[in-house]
Length: 344
Image 1 (cartoon, helix red, strand yellow):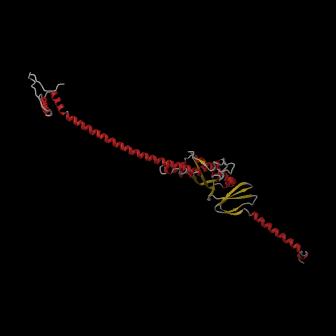
Image 2 (image 1 turned 90 degrees about the vertical axis):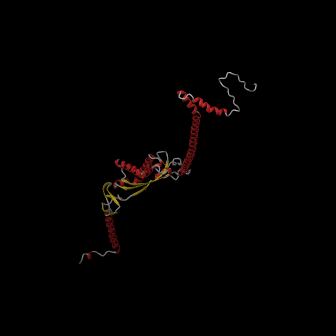
Image 3 (image 1 turned 180 degrees about the horizontal axis):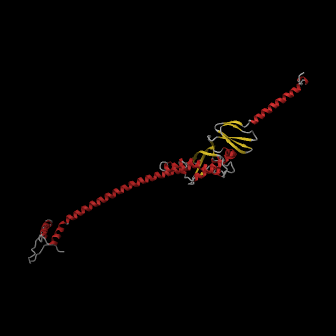
C-alpha cells in the first residue's frame, strides 16, 4: 500500500488553501528576485550612476551593465554623462511682469527687476542661458536639489559684475555711427560671452575649493542684451539730437570755410592791387625825379657845370610856351622898366 493511500483525500477547501499557499509562495519568490535584482540595470551611453551604500559614496560607473546591492543596502542615482550638455535659462535676470504696475503692493521694490547697471551708469536688460556639463557625478547628485537656485545666484552675480566693468558700447551697439570707428569696442562685444562664461566658472571653482562644489563645468554662455522698452524712445531722441547737431555742425563748418575762402580771396586781391598801385607810384615818382636826381649827382661831384643851364633851357621853353606874352629883361641893364598892370 502506497504512502498516498495512508492520507485521506483532501476536500475542495483544503485544495483551495494549498493552491493559494503555493501562489503566495511563488509571488514571494518573484518579489524577492525582483528586489534582489532591482539595482541590476543597463546604464545608457550618455549617462552615469552614483552608487552609495547606506548614504556613503561607493563608486561612480559609466555606461554599461550595473550590478549593485538592492535597497536599502545600496542606492543608485542616474546622472547625465560628461558628454551631455545641459541647459539652464536664468529666470532671475528676467523682468518681473508685476513690475511697474499698480496690481502689486511691491511694485516699487520690483521696479528695478530685470535691469543691469553698466560701468558708465547705463541700464540694459540681459537674457542669459547657461550650458554646462557634469564634471563630478557624486557632487552633482549630492547638490542636485539645490543646483537650480545656486546657478541662478552664481550667473546673476557674474552678469552684474561683468557688465559693471564695461561701457554700454562694449555690451551692445548703442551708437551705430561708432561701430566702424571703434574696433576695440566691437571686439569687447564679441568677447562678452566668453568673459561671462569664465566668471561663472571661477565662482564654480571657488565653491569646489571650499568643498561645496556643484559638480559641473561651463560649456558656454548665450547672452542677449537689449535696451529697456521705456528707454528706447528717449535713447532714440538722444541719437536724433546728436545726428541733428552733427549735421548742423557740418553745415556751419561748410559755411565758415566758404566765408574764409572768400575773405582770403578778397584779401589777396586787395594786397595785389596795393602792390600794383605802389609799384606804379614808385615808378612815376622815379620817372619824375630822375632829372633832379641826375642834377643832384652831377652837382655833388662837379662833373658838368653847364648841366644846370642846359636843363633850364630845356624846361623854360615849355613853361614860357604856356604864357600869353613874355617880356625879357637884361639882368645887366641898370635902366628902369615900367610894366603895364592893374592898380590894386
